[in-house]
Image: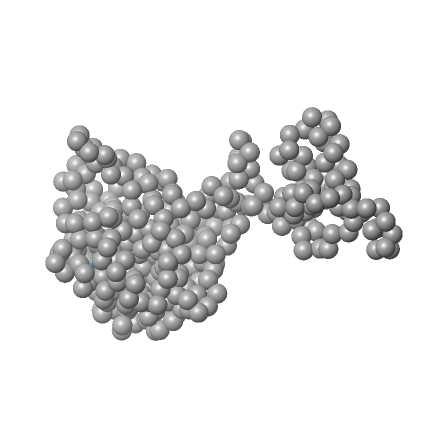
Length: 335
Ligand SMILES: C[S@@+](CC[C@H](N)C(=O)[O-])C[C@H]1O[C@@H](n2cnc3c(N)ncnc32)[C@H](O)[C@@H]1O
């Protein structure tokens, strides 16, 4: 199989089912992000989307509807074999053949963590039905190890938006609204995934130096983002034309070059988290809260201020406030 060695990875031009068997050891991959052909005549998608075909790289290899079930079982079996215990996989899929992918996943040791909906712009206009503008992202894990999920990698738990909502909570919702990239005038693969989507998955589910795999490279977006974020990449693309054009772009990415553009979260872990509450501290919290209420402060602002003053999380502060005010005598007993 033709291969291309790049700093931080290796890309193969060939069938991923054959290639994975030949080149990837059992339990060796930390994270798979992959976007298989959809079995809906993807090679004809430009007609559907009314795209300018001059800018779409030719050679997309589709899988026929009849072969889709067997094909899905074969590559998902390989994906399950190569993932390390605790490793995770994101599969991007349309709706039409989703049931084959779900059925194949059920026959492996992989278990569902989330079923994410990716809502994008410019769904195909239809008159007598709703306009379809979402994909499915199946997020699964191979059980038996520690799964990487970096809860505060993008937004700290305490970070609030202008309406007082939690940025972390919103970012970790299971509906992702992200636009596909237009890239007018640039040569692209059909269905190229937006960088934003790949960055998000890699940030939450991997760390620098982790081994990432994409079984269906296409425009090599996963490979580019993996290298840009200083992860290692191994991947396959069956089409020689796509492989030759798109892997050239991967070669231009400097390892780690995207790291400086990542947002730095404000981390919250309160200084006194896990420390024992004394009756004095509980009394002081009640006293301050009472003062805030008398001054007309809202409950939310009062708790936010208490978080800073007492270096405690909002949940433990709320719990403390629900309890009765400790008796002075308790303090003396503690001393
Ligand atoms: C949906 S596209 C992937 C798009 C890619 N995620 C991107 O962002 O550009 C699927 C790709 O899989 C390739 N493909 C089809 N069958 C394959 C196989 N058995 N092994 C490897 N690649 C295959 C197709 O040629 C196509 O480029």
